[in-house]
Length: 404
Image (cartoon, rainbow, N blue to C red):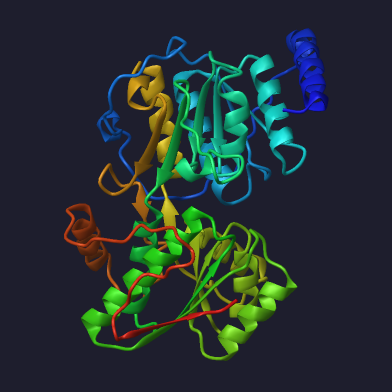
């Protein structure tokens, strides 16, 4: 950590302690985002050997620090915030959030330092960008619990050469994105789509797993049906849409692509903008993004709702589960661990089945539940590779076009 940053942190801590008594807490409420339903059950957490921790497992105050976005981003930060808000409200625990001033490790460390200085002893951090941040703070604050959502083993590194383990006061929770991607791809082909696309954000492990699962699900459905399908596959290199990405999507849709899995935060805006020009459709990611299409139609912005479904992670459910386990004294199941939540642990990934969000024409909820059960019991095995340079193998029914 730089000397400059240490000075900033020292000033911030002292200042925060001085003004803490006269500074009101800010509790924000974001519009609800639907996501996959799950039963919050302590038995869903993986059981590991007990690890000694450095503080009593009693939550005094919870702070969520966003990666760089806002808590109403209609995606990752918002769903995680809803988990913090719901659990803390139900249990009478003080909570708040902090948004870093910029997209940097230093800015995220400053926000965490401020949260700790203002009384938070649990910090919830959504997103892989917190990997390096954890390395700066988990040993610095041994009496604070860090719950990192969507941070995997490949993220705790400074240089992608040397990798570190979480400290005893830290847990890193990831998801089986390949399972959610599989279900979305399988459903799309079963619904009659044969010209598909995958638009990823950056080729980080979570996005790669989503994409590879999507390919595998679409391929399995094509093989079952005996139909030929084609998948265009690309990464935008960013998590927001722009004119260049929209132009690429225009090219896809104009050439016959029927549906695109937009997998990368705000990058979906480019997919939707292009889709609406050609009566195309999209698949959302992370949360049930159907509400975006509904709102667009109501506002007169969209001629129709372009969302068929979304490949979801149970962000809110996992957040609530982790906080409940910590408060119940079961931190040993999380302490110093990289955990992955999948269909094996519970209903933590999938696609939305609510009437208002089920926009398939022929693929049924019953068919979905059948294939989901086959994943849960191991009948269907999905490659969870995150090596962006090696695509999954496909049958003779599927052609994958990688487009730079």
